[in-house]
Length: 265
Length: 265
DNA sequence: GCCCATCTTCAACATAAGTTATCGTGCGCT
DNA sequence: AGCGCACGATAACTTATGTTGAAGATGGGC
Image 1 (cartoon, helix red, strand yellow):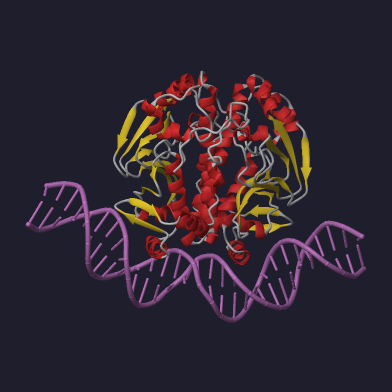
Image 2 (cartoon, protein in one colour; image 1 turned 90 degrees about the vertical axis):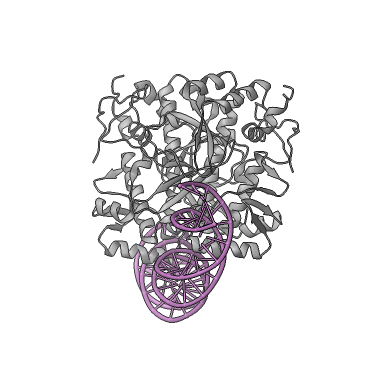
Protein backbone atom coordinates (compact mmCIF):
# COMPACT_ATOMS: atom_id res chain seq x y z
CA UNK A 1 0.00 0.00 0.00
CA UNK A 2 2.86 2.37 -0.82
CA UNK A 3 2.09 5.69 -2.36
CA UNK A 4 2.22 5.46 -6.10
CA UNK A 5 3.94 8.06 -8.18
CA UNK A 6 2.82 11.45 -9.33
CA UNK A 7 -0.30 11.29 -11.53
CA UNK A 8 -2.73 10.64 -8.69
CA UNK A 9 -1.58 13.71 -6.84
CA UNK A 10 -2.76 15.81 -9.70
CA UNK A 11 -5.92 13.88 -10.26
CA UNK A 12 -8.79 15.69 -8.58
CA UNK A 13 -10.86 12.52 -8.12
CA UNK A 14 -8.11 10.64 -6.34
CA UNK A 15 -7.08 13.73 -4.45
CA UNK A 16 -10.60 14.07 -3.12
CA UNK A 17 -11.26 10.40 -2.41
CA UNK A 18 -8.09 10.24 -0.38
CA UNK A 19 -9.58 12.75 2.00
CA UNK A 20 -11.95 9.94 2.89
CA UNK A 21 -9.90 6.77 2.76
CA UNK A 22 -6.46 5.61 1.87
CA UNK A 23 -6.48 4.06 -1.59
CA UNK A 24 -4.24 1.19 -2.62
CA UNK A 25 -2.23 1.37 -5.81
CA UNK A 26 -4.92 -0.82 -7.36
CA UNK A 27 -7.68 1.50 -6.20
CA UNK A 28 -5.83 4.40 -7.73
CA UNK A 29 -5.31 2.56 -10.96
CA UNK A 30 -9.03 1.78 -11.04
CA UNK A 31 -9.94 5.39 -10.39
CA UNK A 32 -7.63 6.43 -13.22
CA UNK A 33 -9.30 3.97 -15.55
CA UNK A 34 -12.64 5.58 -14.79
CA UNK A 35 -11.14 9.02 -15.18
CA UNK A 36 -9.68 8.23 -18.58
CA UNK A 37 -12.74 6.51 -20.03
CA UNK A 38 -14.52 7.81 -23.15
CA UNK A 39 -13.97 11.52 -22.83
CA UNK A 40 -16.55 13.81 -24.26
CA UNK A 41 -16.25 17.58 -24.54
CA UNK A 42 -18.98 20.15 -24.30
CA UNK A 43 -19.03 23.87 -24.88
CA UNK A 44 -20.13 26.19 -22.10
CA UNK A 45 -23.91 26.07 -21.65
CA UNK A 46 -24.44 22.93 -23.69
CA UNK A 47 -26.65 20.32 -22.13
CA UNK A 48 -24.91 17.09 -21.20
CA UNK A 49 -27.98 15.25 -19.98
CA UNK A 50 -31.57 16.25 -20.55
CA UNK A 51 -34.73 15.76 -18.57
CA UNK A 52 -36.50 12.68 -19.89
CA UNK A 53 -33.31 10.97 -21.06
CA UNK A 54 -32.83 7.38 -20.11
CA UNK A 55 -29.71 7.17 -17.97
CA UNK A 56 -27.06 5.02 -19.63
CA UNK A 57 -23.73 5.99 -18.16
CA UNK A 58 -22.21 7.36 -15.04
CA UNK A 59 -20.32 10.58 -15.67
CA UNK A 60 -17.26 12.06 -14.11
CA UNK A 61 -16.06 15.60 -14.61
CA UNK A 62 -12.49 15.57 -15.84
CA UNK A 63 -11.98 19.25 -16.54
CA UNK A 64 -14.21 22.31 -16.32
CA UNK A 65 -17.41 22.91 -14.39
CA UNK A 66 -20.91 21.57 -14.90
CA UNK A 67 -24.21 21.92 -13.07
CA UNK A 68 -27.52 20.22 -12.46
CA UNK A 69 -30.60 22.33 -12.97
CA UNK A 70 -34.31 22.14 -13.31
CA UNK A 71 -36.96 24.30 -14.90
CA UNK A 72 -40.44 25.17 -13.77
CA UNK A 73 -42.98 25.12 -16.60
CA UNK A 74 -42.96 28.88 -16.80
CA UNK A 75 -39.22 29.08 -17.30
CA UNK A 76 -37.96 29.78 -13.80
CA UNK A 77 -34.69 27.93 -13.39
CA UNK A 78 -33.03 26.54 -10.30
CA UNK A 79 -29.50 25.25 -10.25
CA UNK A 80 -29.40 22.19 -8.00
CA UNK A 81 -25.72 21.51 -7.77
CA UNK A 82 -22.32 22.22 -9.17
CA UNK A 83 -19.78 19.74 -10.48
CA UNK A 84 -16.12 20.58 -10.40
CA UNK A 85 -13.28 18.41 -11.69
CA UNK A 86 -13.25 15.07 -9.94
CA UNK A 87 -16.98 15.10 -9.21
CA UNK A 88 -19.10 12.09 -10.10
CA UNK A 89 -22.49 12.79 -11.59
CA UNK A 90 -24.67 9.83 -10.70
CA UNK A 91 -23.18 6.66 -9.35
CA UNK A 92 -26.39 4.68 -9.33
CA UNK A 93 -28.31 6.40 -12.02
CA UNK A 94 -28.89 3.22 -14.00
CA UNK A 95 -31.62 2.42 -11.54
CA UNK A 96 -33.88 5.20 -12.70
CA UNK A 97 -35.84 4.99 -15.90
CA UNK A 98 -35.74 8.63 -16.73
CA UNK A 99 -33.80 11.74 -15.75
CA UNK A 100 -35.88 14.28 -13.85
CA UNK A 101 -33.51 17.18 -14.46
CA UNK A 102 -30.79 18.55 -16.72
CA UNK A 103 -27.04 18.54 -16.47
CA UNK A 104 -25.19 21.20 -18.42
CA UNK A 105 -21.70 22.53 -18.94
CA UNK A 106 -20.99 25.73 -17.03
CA UNK A 107 -17.60 26.25 -18.64
CA UNK A 108 -16.18 24.21 -21.49
CA UNK A 109 -16.04 20.81 -19.90
CA UNK A 110 -14.59 17.34 -20.44
CA UNK A 111 -16.61 14.46 -19.09
CA UNK A 112 -15.72 10.78 -18.79
CA UNK A 113 -18.60 8.43 -19.57
CA UNK A 114 -18.49 5.20 -17.67
CA UNK A 115 -20.69 2.28 -18.55
CA UNK A 116 -22.31 0.14 -15.92
CA UNK A 117 -20.11 -2.74 -17.03
CA UNK A 118 -16.86 -0.87 -16.67
CA UNK A 119 -17.91 0.49 -13.31
CA UNK A 120 -18.70 -2.99 -12.08
CA UNK A 121 -15.48 -4.38 -13.47
CA UNK A 122 -13.34 -1.70 -11.89
CA UNK A 123 -15.03 -1.74 -8.51
CA UNK A 124 -15.42 -5.49 -8.19
CA UNK A 125 -11.80 -6.01 -7.33
CA UNK A 126 -11.51 -2.77 -5.41
CA UNK A 127 -14.19 -2.60 -2.76
CA UNK A 128 -12.51 0.30 -1.11
CA UNK A 129 -12.71 2.34 -4.27
CA UNK A 130 -16.39 1.47 -4.51
CA UNK A 131 -16.87 2.58 -0.95
CA UNK A 132 -15.07 5.83 -1.68
CA UNK A 133 -17.36 6.43 -4.64
CA UNK A 134 -20.36 5.83 -2.42
CA UNK A 135 -18.94 8.29 0.03
CA UNK A 136 -18.63 10.88 -2.71
CA UNK A 137 -22.22 10.23 -3.67
CA UNK A 138 -23.39 10.70 -0.08
CA UNK A 139 -21.41 13.91 0.16
CA UNK A 140 -23.20 15.14 -2.95
CA UNK A 141 -26.51 14.46 -1.27
CA UNK A 142 -25.35 16.18 1.91
CA UNK A 143 -24.30 19.18 -0.14
CA UNK A 144 -27.78 19.34 -1.61
CA UNK A 145 -29.14 19.39 1.92
CA UNK A 146 -26.89 22.27 2.82
CA UNK A 147 -28.12 24.14 -0.24
CA UNK A 148 -31.64 23.63 1.05
CA UNK A 149 -30.63 25.31 4.29
CA UNK A 150 -29.07 28.04 2.21
CA UNK A 151 -32.24 28.77 0.28
CA UNK A 152 -34.61 28.26 3.15
CA UNK A 153 -32.86 30.12 5.94
CA UNK A 154 -29.99 32.26 4.83
CA UNK A 155 -30.15 35.88 3.71
CA UNK A 156 -28.83 36.94 0.33
CA UNK A 157 -25.53 37.97 1.84
CA UNK A 158 -25.17 34.69 3.68
CA UNK A 159 -26.15 32.65 0.63
CA UNK A 160 -23.50 34.21 -1.50
CA UNK A 161 -20.72 34.06 1.06
CA UNK A 162 -21.68 30.47 1.81
CA UNK A 163 -21.40 29.58 -1.85
CA UNK A 164 -17.97 31.18 -2.03
CA UNK A 165 -16.81 29.23 1.02
CA UNK A 166 -18.08 25.97 -0.33
CA UNK A 167 -16.54 26.38 -3.73
CA UNK A 168 -13.21 27.28 -2.29
CA UNK A 169 -13.19 24.35 0.13
CA UNK A 170 -14.31 21.88 -2.51
CA UNK A 171 -11.69 23.02 -4.96
CA UNK A 172 -9.14 22.81 -2.21
CA UNK A 173 -10.18 19.24 -1.46
CA UNK A 174 -9.71 18.47 -5.13
CA UNK A 175 -6.23 19.94 -5.03
CA UNK A 176 -7.22 22.89 -7.16
CA UNK A 177 -6.75 25.83 -4.89
CA UNK A 178 -3.71 28.04 -4.68
CA UNK A 179 -3.30 29.43 -1.21
CA UNK A 180 -6.50 31.34 -0.55
CA UNK A 181 -7.50 31.62 -4.16
CA UNK A 182 -9.12 29.42 -6.76
CA UNK A 183 -10.81 29.47 -10.14
CA UNK A 184 -14.26 31.03 -10.16
CA UNK A 185 -15.99 31.00 -13.55
CA UNK A 186 -19.56 31.66 -12.38
CA UNK A 187 -21.44 34.60 -13.83
CA UNK A 188 -23.81 36.54 -11.64
CA UNK A 189 -26.70 35.03 -13.58
CA UNK A 190 -25.51 31.58 -12.53
CA UNK A 191 -25.13 32.72 -8.96
CA UNK A 192 -28.68 34.02 -9.12
CA UNK A 193 -29.96 30.66 -10.32
CA UNK A 194 -28.00 28.90 -7.61
CA UNK A 195 -29.08 31.15 -4.76
CA UNK A 196 -32.66 31.77 -5.86
CA UNK A 197 -32.06 35.51 -6.06
CA UNK A 198 -32.54 37.97 -8.89
CA UNK A 199 -29.47 39.00 -10.86
CA UNK A 200 -29.88 42.56 -9.69
CA UNK A 201 -29.83 41.53 -6.10
CA UNK A 202 -26.83 39.30 -6.65
CA UNK A 203 -24.99 42.26 -8.10
CA UNK A 204 -25.93 44.46 -5.15
CA UNK A 205 -25.08 41.84 -2.58
CA UNK A 206 -21.85 40.80 -4.20
CA UNK A 207 -20.69 44.36 -3.98
CA UNK A 208 -21.41 44.41 -0.30
CA UNK A 209 -19.34 41.27 0.10
CA UNK A 210 -16.46 42.93 -1.71
CA UNK A 211 -16.85 46.18 0.18
CA UNK A 212 -16.63 44.26 3.42
CA UNK A 213 -13.19 43.19 2.25
CA UNK A 214 -14.04 39.50 2.40
CA UNK A 215 -13.13 38.54 -1.14
CA UNK A 216 -12.03 39.84 -4.48
CA UNK A 217 -12.67 38.45 -7.94
CA UNK A 218 -10.49 39.28 -10.86
CA UNK A 219 -10.23 37.51 -14.18
CA UNK A 220 -12.43 34.64 -12.99
CA UNK A 221 -10.17 34.08 -10.01
CA UNK A 222 -11.62 34.21 -6.52
CA UNK A 223 -9.28 35.55 -3.86
CA UNK A 224 -10.40 35.14 -0.29
CA UNK A 225 -9.00 37.76 2.03
CA UNK A 226 -10.20 36.30 5.28
CA UNK A 227 -11.55 32.77 5.26
CA UNK A 228 -12.59 32.80 8.88
CA UNK A 229 -14.53 36.01 8.42
CA UNK A 230 -16.15 34.56 5.30
CA UNK A 231 -17.19 31.48 7.23
CA UNK A 232 -18.53 33.57 10.07
CA UNK A 233 -20.49 35.77 7.69
CA UNK A 234 -22.21 32.80 6.08
CA UNK A 235 -22.67 30.75 9.27
CA UNK A 236 -20.56 28.15 7.55
CA UNK A 237 -20.26 24.69 9.01
CA UNK A 238 -18.37 22.46 6.66
CA UNK A 239 -19.27 19.17 8.29
CA UNK A 240 -21.52 18.33 5.36
CA UNK A 241 -18.51 17.95 3.10
CA UNK A 242 -17.32 15.13 5.36
CA UNK A 243 -13.72 15.89 4.59
CA UNK A 244 -12.56 14.66 7.94
CA UNK A 245 -10.32 16.51 10.30
CA UNK A 246 -6.64 17.09 9.93
CA UNK A 247 -6.40 14.58 7.15
CA UNK A 248 -7.21 11.60 9.35
CA UNK A 249 -8.35 8.62 7.34
CA UNK A 250 -10.50 5.58 7.84
CA UNK A 251 -9.25 2.12 7.11
CA UNK A 252 -11.48 -0.48 5.58
CA UNK A 253 -12.95 -1.49 8.94
CA UNK A 254 -14.13 1.97 9.69
CA UNK A 255 -11.47 2.63 12.31
CA UNK A 256 -9.21 5.65 12.17
CA UNK A 257 -5.99 4.98 10.38
CA UNK A 258 -2.73 6.81 10.70
CA UNK A 259 -2.69 10.33 9.41
CA UNK A 260 -1.95 10.40 5.72
CA UNK A 261 0.38 12.65 3.87
CA UNK A 262 -2.64 14.53 2.56
CA UNK A 263 -1.63 17.99 1.57
CA UNK A 264 -3.43 20.97 3.00
CA UNK A 265 -2.69 24.53 2.13
CA UNK B 1 -42.91 -15.45 -8.41
CA UNK B 2 -46.55 -15.81 -7.46
CA UNK B 3 -48.20 -13.06 -5.54
CA UNK B 4 -48.15 -13.75 -1.87
CA UNK B 5 -51.12 -13.14 0.32
CA UNK B 6 -52.36 -10.07 2.11
CA UNK B 7 -49.80 -8.59 4.49
CA UNK B 8 -47.66 -7.01 1.80
CA UNK B 9 -50.60 -5.11 0.42
CA UNK B 10 -50.92 -3.28 3.69
CA UNK B 11 -47.22 -2.81 4.14
CA UNK B 12 -46.28 0.69 3.00
CA UNK B 13 -42.71 -0.26 2.13
CA UNK B 14 -43.69 -3.11 -0.10
CA UNK B 15 -46.57 -1.15 -1.52
CA UNK B 16 -44.21 1.59 -2.53
CA UNK B 17 -41.37 -0.58 -3.82
CA UNK B 18 -43.81 -2.40 -6.04
CA UNK B 19 -44.45 0.84 -7.84
CA UNK B 20 -40.89 0.41 -9.06
CA UNK B 21 -40.40 -3.29 -9.61
CA UNK B 22 -42.22 -6.53 -9.15
CA UNK B 23 -40.98 -8.25 -6.02
CA UNK B 24 -40.77 -12.00 -5.64
CA UNK B 25 -42.20 -13.72 -2.59
CA UNK B 26 -38.65 -13.90 -1.29
CA UNK B 27 -38.12 -10.20 -1.86
CA UNK B 28 -41.31 -9.49 0.03
CA UNK B 29 -40.31 -11.74 2.86
CA UNK B 30 -36.97 -9.95 3.03
CA UNK B 31 -38.66 -6.56 3.09
CA UNK B 32 -40.89 -7.75 5.89
CA UNK B 33 -37.87 -8.91 7.87
CA UNK B 34 -36.44 -5.43 7.60
CA UNK B 35 -39.76 -3.90 8.49
CA UNK B 36 -40.14 -6.00 11.60
CA UNK B 37 -36.62 -5.56 12.93
CA UNK B 38 -35.90 -3.99 16.35
CA UNK B 39 -38.72 -1.53 16.62
CA UNK B 40 -38.15 1.61 18.58
CA UNK B 41 -40.80 4.16 19.48
CA UNK B 42 -40.38 7.88 19.87
CA UNK B 43 -42.71 10.59 21.09
CA UNK B 44 -43.52 13.49 18.81
CA UNK B 45 -40.58 15.91 18.59
CA UNK B 46 -38.05 13.56 20.10
CA UNK B 47 -34.77 13.32 18.26
CA UNK B 48 -34.08 9.95 16.68
CA UNK B 49 -30.63 10.77 15.37
CA UNK B 50 -28.51 13.73 16.34
CA UNK B 51 -25.91 15.74 14.51
CA UNK B 52 -22.48 14.36 15.38
CA UNK B 53 -23.75 10.83 16.02
CA UNK B 54 -21.86 8.00 14.46
CA UNK B 55 -24.24 6.20 12.10
CA UNK B 56 -24.77 2.61 13.19
CA UNK B 57 -28.03 1.44 11.71
CA UNK B 58 -30.27 2.02 8.77
CA UNK B 59 -33.75 3.11 9.83
CA UNK B 60 -37.12 2.51 8.35
CA UNK B 61 -40.28 4.28 9.38
CA UNK B 62 -42.91 1.74 10.36
CA UNK B 63 -45.62 4.04 11.63
CA UNK B 64 -45.91 7.79 12.09
CA UNK B 65 -43.99 10.63 10.49
CA UNK B 66 -40.41 11.80 10.99
CA UNK B 67 -38.24 14.50 9.48
CA UNK B 68 -34.66 15.48 8.80
CA UNK B 69 -33.62 18.94 9.86
CA UNK B 70 -30.66 21.13 10.39
CA UNK B 71 -29.93 24.18 12.51
CA UNK B 72 -27.90 27.26 11.76
CA UNK B 73 -25.75 28.38 14.69
CA UNK B 74 -28.17 31.12 15.54
CA UNK B 75 -31.13 28.78 15.82
CA UNK B 76 -32.78 29.09 12.43
CA UNK B 77 -34.09 25.68 11.51
CA UNK B 78 -34.66 24.11 8.11
CA UNK B 79 -36.53 20.88 7.61
CA UNK B 80 -34.78 18.92 4.88
CA UNK B 81 -37.16 16.09 4.30
CA UNK B 82 -40.13 14.18 5.58
CA UNK B 83 -40.39 10.47 6.28
CA UNK B 84 -43.72 8.75 6.11
CA UNK B 85 -44.41 5.09 6.82
CA UNK B 86 -42.39 2.87 4.52
CA UNK B 87 -39.62 5.43 4.05
CA UNK B 88 -36.01 4.40 4.54
CA UNK B 89 -33.77 6.83 6.34
CA UNK B 90 -30.26 6.20 5.10
CA UNK B 91 -29.43 3.11 3.13
CA UNK B 92 -25.71 3.71 2.96
CA UNK B 93 -25.20 5.76 6.02
CA UNK B 94 -22.58 3.44 7.48
CA UNK B 95 -20.13 5.00 5.10
CA UNK B 96 -20.12 8.34 6.86
CA UNK B 97 -18.28 8.89 10.10
CA UNK B 98 -20.65 11.40 11.53
CA UNK B 99 -24.20 12.63 10.97
CA UNK B 100 -24.37 16.18 9.68
CA UNK B 101 -28.01 16.72 10.63
CA UNK B 102 -30.82 15.60 12.91
CA UNK B 103 -33.69 13.21 12.43
CA UNK B 104 -36.69 13.66 14.68
CA UNK B 105 -40.18 12.33 15.19
CA UNK B 106 -42.90 14.58 13.82
CA UNK B 107 -45.72 12.52 15.28
CA UNK B 108 -45.30 9.59 17.65
CA UNK B 109 -43.32 7.23 15.48
CA UNK B 110 -42.17 3.63 15.32
CA UNK B 111 -38.85 3.01 13.63
CA UNK B 112 -37.18 -0.25 12.65
CA UNK B 113 -33.42 -0.29 13.19
CA UNK B 114 -31.54 -2.44 10.76
CA UNK B 115 -27.92 -3.34 11.26
CA UNK B 116 -25.50 -3.42 8.41
CA UNK B 117 -25.23 -7.19 8.87
CA UNK B 118 -28.94 -7.84 8.62
CA UNK B 119 -29.22 -5.57 5.62
CA UNK B 120 -26.45 -7.44 3.87
CA UNK B 121 -27.92 -10.78 4.79
CA UNK B 122 -31.39 -9.89 3.54
CA UNK B 123 -30.30 -8.25 0.33
CA UNK B 124 -27.59 -10.73 -0.61
CA UNK B 125 -30.06 -13.31 -1.78
CA UNK B 126 -32.50 -10.74 -3.12
CA UNK B 127 -30.73 -8.43 -5.53
CA UNK B 128 -34.00 -7.07 -6.75
CA UNK B 129 -34.95 -5.98 -3.28
CA UNK B 130 -31.57 -4.30 -2.96
CA UNK B 131 -32.16 -2.55 -6.24
CA UNK B 132 -35.58 -1.42 -5.06
CA UNK B 133 -34.03 0.01 -1.90
CA UNK B 134 -31.50 1.87 -4.00
CA UNK B 135 -34.32 3.21 -6.07
CA UNK B 136 -36.05 4.48 -2.96
CA UNK B 137 -32.83 6.14 -1.90
CA UNK B 138 -32.48 7.86 -5.28
CA UNK B 139 -36.07 9.02 -5.07
CA UNK B 140 -35.29 10.56 -1.69
CA UNK B 141 -32.44 12.47 -3.25
CA UNK B 142 -34.62 13.55 -6.14
CA UNK B 143 -37.23 14.77 -3.69
CA UNK B 144 -34.60 16.86 -2.00
CA UNK B 145 -33.80 18.39 -5.37
CA UNK B 146 -37.43 19.26 -5.89
CA UNK B 147 -37.51 20.91 -2.48
CA UNK B 148 -34.58 23.02 -3.62
CA UNK B 149 -36.64 24.17 -6.58
CA UNK B 150 -39.45 24.85 -4.17
CA UNK B 151 -37.38 27.11 -1.95
CA UNK B 152 -35.43 28.74 -4.71
CA UNK B 153 -38.14 29.48 -7.23
CA UNK B 154 -41.64 29.04 -5.96
CA UNK B 155 -43.76 31.66 -4.21
CA UNK B 156 -45.24 31.01 -0.79
CA UNK B 157 -48.53 29.90 -2.32
CA UNK B 158 -46.79 27.55 -4.71
CA UNK B 159 -44.54 26.13 -2.02
CA UNK B 160 -47.44 25.22 0.18
CA UNK B 161 -49.62 23.76 -2.54
CA UNK B 162 -46.62 21.83 -3.83
CA UNK B 163 -46.04 20.35 -0.41
CA UNK B 164 -49.67 19.30 -0.18
CA UNK B 165 -49.51 17.63 -3.59
CA UNK B 166 -46.35 15.79 -2.75
CA UNK B 167 -47.56 14.51 0.58
CA UNK B 168 -50.77 13.27 -0.90
CA UNK B 169 -49.04 11.50 -3.78
CA UNK B 170 -46.43 9.92 -1.55
CA UNK B 171 -49.02 8.66 0.89
CA UNK B 172 -51.00 7.34 -2.02
CA UNK B 173 -47.96 5.46 -3.30
CA UNK B 174 -47.59 3.96 0.15
CA UNK B 175 -51.20 2.83 0.08
CA UNK B 176 -52.20 5.31 2.75
CA UNK B 177 -54.61 7.58 0.97
CA UNK B 178 -58.35 7.31 0.96
CA UNK B 179 -59.79 8.70 -2.23
CA UNK B 180 -58.60 12.29 -2.34
CA UNK B 181 -57.80 12.52 1.32
CA UNK B 182 -54.97 11.48 3.60
CA UNK B 183 -53.51 12.01 7.03
CA UNK B 184 -51.87 15.38 7.55
CA UNK B 185 -50.33 15.90 10.97
CA UNK B 186 -48.10 18.89 10.17
CA UNK B 187 -48.46 22.05 12.22
CA UNK B 188 -48.03 25.40 10.56
CA UNK B 189 -44.75 25.80 12.39
CA UNK B 190 -43.50 22.63 10.69
CA UNK B 191 -44.74 23.86 7.35
CA UNK B 192 -42.88 27.09 7.97
CA UNK B 193 -39.65 25.21 8.65
CA UNK B 194 -40.18 23.10 5.55
CA UNK B 195 -40.98 25.96 3.21
CA UNK B 196 -38.58 28.54 4.62
CA UNK B 197 -41.44 30.92 5.42
CA UNK B 198 -42.48 32.57 8.67
CA UNK B 199 -45.36 30.99 10.57
CA UNK B 200 -47.42 34.12 10.11
CA UNK B 201 -47.03 33.96 6.39
CA UNK B 202 -47.83 30.27 6.33
CA UNK B 203 -51.05 31.03 8.15
CA UNK B 204 -51.95 33.81 5.70
CA UNK B 205 -51.07 31.75 2.67
CA UNK B 206 -52.76 28.60 3.86
CA UNK B 207 -55.94 30.54 4.20
CA UNK B 208 -55.67 31.68 0.64
CA UNK B 209 -55.25 28.08 -0.44
CA UNK B 210 -58.40 27.15 1.43
CA UNK B 211 -60.30 30.15 0.17
CA UNK B 212 -59.44 29.13 -3.35
CA UNK B 213 -61.30 25.94 -2.61
CA UNK B 214 -58.29 23.76 -3.34
CA UNK B 215 -58.16 21.82 -0.09
CA UNK B 216 -59.61 21.51 3.35
CA UNK B 217 -58.01 20.27 6.55
CA UNK B 218 -60.02 18.97 9.42
CA UNK B 219 -58.87 16.89 12.35
CA UNK B 220 -55.43 16.42 10.83
CA UNK B 221 -56.97 15.06 7.65
CA UNK B 222 -56.17 16.69 4.34
CA UNK B 223 -58.99 16.64 1.81
CA UNK B 224 -58.11 17.67 -1.70
CA UNK B 225 -60.99 19.14 -3.61
CA UNK B 226 -59.36 19.38 -6.98
CA UNK B 227 -56.04 17.61 -7.47
CA UNK B 228 -55.48 18.94 -10.97
CA UNK B 229 -56.06 22.48 -9.82
CA UNK B 230 -53.69 21.93 -6.91
CA UNK B 231 -51.04 20.62 -9.27
CA UNK B 232 -51.54 23.53 -11.62
CA UNK B 233 -51.32 26.04 -8.77
CA UNK B 234 -48.00 24.64 -7.61
CA UNK B 235 -46.52 23.97 -11.04
CA UNK B 236 -46.35 20.37 -9.95
CA UNK B 237 -44.44 17.85 -11.99
CA UNK B 238 -44.30 14.56 -10.20
CA UNK B 239 -41.60 12.97 -12.31
CA UNK B 240 -39.15 13.28 -9.43
CA UNK B 241 -41.05 10.67 -7.46
CA UNK B 242 -40.30 8.19 -10.23
CA UNK B 243 -43.48 6.32 -9.58
CA UNK B 244 -43.77 5.21 -13.16
CA UNK B 245 -46.81 5.59 -15.32
CA UNK B 246 -49.98 3.61 -15.07
CA UNK B 247 -48.36 1.12 -12.79
CA UNK B 248 -45.99 -0.22 -15.42
CA UNK B 249 -43.07 -2.06 -13.87
CA UNK B 250 -39.49 -2.83 -14.74
CA UNK B 251 -38.14 -6.35 -14.67
CA UNK B 252 -34.63 -7.07 -13.51
CA UNK B 253 -33.11 -6.34 -16.92
CA UNK B 254 -34.51 -2.85 -16.96
CA UNK B 255 -37.13 -3.61 -19.60
CA UNK B 256 -40.78 -2.84 -19.07
CA UNK B 257 -42.69 -5.75 -17.61
CA UNK B 258 -46.38 -6.44 -17.85
CA UNK B 259 -48.62 -4.07 -15.96
CA UNK B 260 -48.96 -5.14 -12.35
CA UNK B 261 -52.05 -5.33 -10.26
CA UNK B 262 -50.95 -2.23 -8.41
CA UNK B 263 -53.94 -0.48 -7.00
CA UNK B 264 -54.53 3.19 -7.79
CA UNK B 265 -57.32 5.23 -6.38
C1' DG C 1 -63.93 19.87 33.98
C1' DC C 2 -60.45 22.91 34.09
C1' DC C 3 -55.81 24.52 33.05
C1' DC C 4 -51.86 25.30 30.50
C1' DA C 5 -49.51 24.22 26.27
C1' DT C 6 -49.45 24.69 21.68
C1' DC C 7 -51.44 26.10 17.68
C1' DT C 8 -53.74 29.46 14.71
C1' DT C 9 -55.24 33.96 13.39
C1' DC C 10 -55.00 38.85 12.93
C1' DA C 11 -53.35 43.67 12.47
C1' DA C 12 -49.83 47.18 11.77
C1' DC C 13 -45.72 47.93 10.35
C1' DA C 14 -40.74 47.08 8.59
C1' DT C 15 -37.67 45.41 5.14
C1' DA C 16 -35.33 42.31 2.07
C1' DA C 17 -35.59 41.22 -2.30
C1' DG C 18 -37.87 41.58 -7.02
C1' DT C 19 -38.77 44.37 -11.27
C1' DT C 20 -37.89 47.25 -14.99
C1' DA C 21 -35.10 49.86 -17.47
C1' DT C 22 -30.85 52.11 -18.74
C1' DC C 23 -25.94 52.29 -19.48
C1' DG C 24 -21.10 50.99 -19.71
C1' DT C 25 -17.65 47.59 -20.55
C1' DG C 26 -15.24 43.96 -22.61
C1' DC C 27 -14.77 40.28 -25.63
C1' DG C 28 -15.45 37.18 -29.48
C1' DC C 29 -16.73 37.29 -34.43
C1' DT C 30 -16.70 38.57 -39.03
C1' DA D 1 -11.71 47.71 -36.97
C1' DG D 2 -16.19 47.51 -35.69
C1' DC D 3 -20.51 45.14 -34.69
C1' DG D 4 -23.21 42.48 -31.49
C1' DC D 5 -23.95 40.34 -27.34
C1' DA D 6 -23.26 38.73 -22.75
C1' DC D 7 -22.17 40.55 -18.54
C1' DG D 8 -22.22 43.69 -14.67
C1' DA D 9 -23.61 48.13 -12.34
C1' DT D 10 -26.99 51.34 -10.93
C1' DA D 11 -31.34 53.85 -9.96
C1' DA D 12 -36.22 54.19 -8.84
C1' DC D 13 -39.89 51.94 -7.59
C1' DT D 14 -42.94 47.77 -6.22
C1' DT D 15 -44.04 43.84 -3.61
C1' DA D 16 -43.75 39.62 -1.17
C1' DT D 17 -42.62 38.21 2.96
C1' DG D 18 -40.85 39.02 7.80
C1' DT D 19 -41.62 40.95 12.56
C1' DT D 20 -43.85 42.02 16.68
C1' DG D 21 -47.33 41.50 19.70
C1' DA D 22 -51.64 40.12 21.16
C1' DA D 23 -55.92 37.54 21.20
C1' DG D 24 -58.71 33.38 20.10
C1' DA D 25 -58.96 28.36 19.41
C1' DT D 26 -57.87 23.73 20.42
C1' DG D 27 -56.61 19.85 22.88
C1' DG D 28 -54.23 16.78 26.17
C1' DG D 29 -53.29 15.82 31.03
C1' DC D 30 -54.58 15.78 35.85
